[in-house]
Image (cartoon, rainbow, N blue to C red; front, side, top):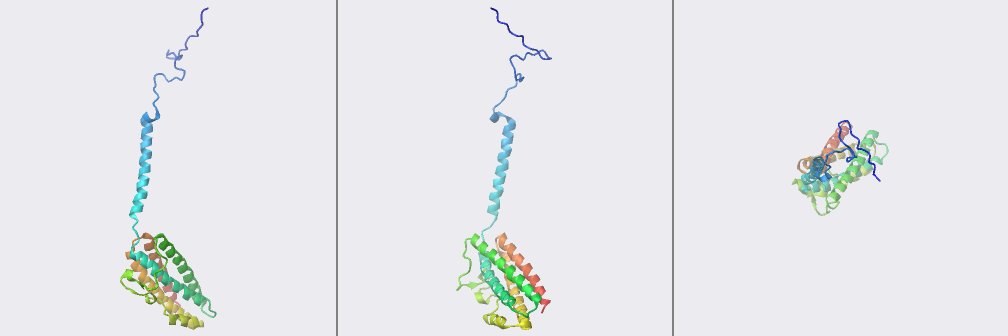
Amino acid sequence: MTDLQAPALDDDNGDEKGDDPAGLGDEIVLPWWQSPLNLILLLVGVLVLAAGAGFVVGERHATPDPNNVDIGFLWDMRTHHEQAVEMSLTFISKTGTNPTIGLIAREIAFGQAVESGKMIQLLRQYGQQEARDDDEDGMGWMNEPVPQDRMPGLASAADLDRLTAATGADADELYLKLMIAHHEGGIHMAQYAQEHAATSEVIALAASMVSNQQGEIAEMRNLE
C-alpha cells in the first residue's frame, strides 16, 4: 500500500514551508543573556540602581554630625523658650490687659512651645540628653560661658514675681519690656548658631527663630 503525502505549499517566492511552520526560516533565537538588547537594558538598570545608591550614600556622607554649637544651642535655647512660655502664660491668665498684647503673648507661647518640641526631637535624634545638667554653665558653645539663669534676655526671679503681681496697664508694660529683652537675648544666641552650627536642621531652626522674634519685637515696640 502506497502512502499518500500532500505536497508542500509554496509561498509567493516559491519557498517551501513544510519544514518551517513558524515562518522563521533561518533566524536564530538567542537565550536572553546572549541578546545584545537585553544586555544593554540590564546594564542601564544596573547603572541606574548604582547611581541611586551612590546618591543616598553621598547624601548621608555629606550630612555632618552635630557639633558642640548644635547641641549647646538646643539645650540653652530650650531653657530660654521655656521661660518665654511661662511669662506668656502668666500674662494671658490676667484680666484687664491689652487684648492685642494678649494675642501676641498667645502667639509666643504657642510658637515657642512648638519649637521646644522640635529641639527635644533633634536632641533625641542626635543621641543627646534632652536638657543640660543643672550645674553646667550655658553658652560655652558660643564662647560666652555664664550660669544658665543669667543667659542674656532671661528674666530674674524678681522680675517673674513682679509680672505675676502686676495688673492692667502695669502688666502690659512689664510684659512688653521683659519679652523684648528676652527676644533680643534669644536672637543673639540664634544668630551665632545660624553661623556656626554644623547640621542643616539646627541652622534652619535658628534662622527661623531670628526672623520670627525680630518680627515679634517690631510688633511689641509699636505697643510700648
